[in-house]
Image (tube, rainbow, N blue to C red; front, side):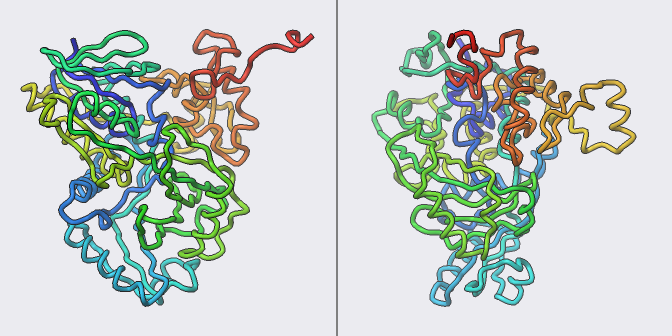
Length: 478
């Protein structure tokens, strides 16, 4: 019997796991995929939102601002790339100025610091490639950009180091209430816990509705993106939005912490909770809409496109807490944008609910800090040379586009909750994220992974499950 089981190892579940690991408790995270950060948490805008968009008085607004304020310390503690580059919401017609002013007023009421409206002359100085139609913009200096993979992985690793157990490739099929708490039936057996934290993303409604008579509904909202090469990474220096609409914050153009340029997302409600494919129609829509805020975006420098699903709740609100008819079952549901930003605050809120329910006490030996994969390019020339003398693997470059060495890949595999697939390596080291999109480095990365895991190359996958690269040999076809 566990004290707490968390369903889902995305950014919300990992944040809750880290916060709960501050207490004396037996905790387990169940994740249906082969790694952390395999759902919405890996396919989003990588933005730390300032908090001006959510409705005044909403939990979404409160936790957005809290999460934004927590991000600096969290990034320092866990060695996460994070930059407060600021954001702009562009108004392209005088008729829309009242909407821009209303957004400013909403942000001020939400507690967002430093908000102000900038006129065109200043706006052009700030962003020379701003649209010729731009009249003014809402400037939020507290907006930022972050690595969503590293945020998710770092919180999960830190939770693991503080005693939280992670079970991957474990799909929860049913949840039922018992006298002691909850029984979870999975495809790998039965798990029992006194409390459950439901951080299942687009599937959170499914588990909530198993234990509560007050039903909720989560609709997958697909967002498609372009990612551009680093040569376009300085096209804008801030995150540039259009005015928000019915389905979200609109299409943005933004630098990333790794030096790329990201454009997106679209926003379309769909029925399939696994439909993360891109579409010709969606990508064409991006090409048109991004020009509303930023002119002549160099889309010829696109190196990849991708799509993610946001967990849209019917009331467009975070649902965090225990249903009246299921005490001990803590929902973290409807976590769509700004969920990445709010995740540290969501994790803290969920942990406090569980703490109070179970009467948990704090540890004196909680480990608050973590460290990223060792990056030789962060070292001085002398430090790098010394490192290579001690560990020659850091002198062997595997991914030429991102200059990722064998030493970094070994670190990614051997660290807590280490990589077990090529995507796992990619999220931890960026090997395969460059211009050639893993065209050259995949075979070498597969060799290293097979050697470290003590398995054959034919067992290595892109992202777990049946996503194997090698399905036979040349002789099989003779």
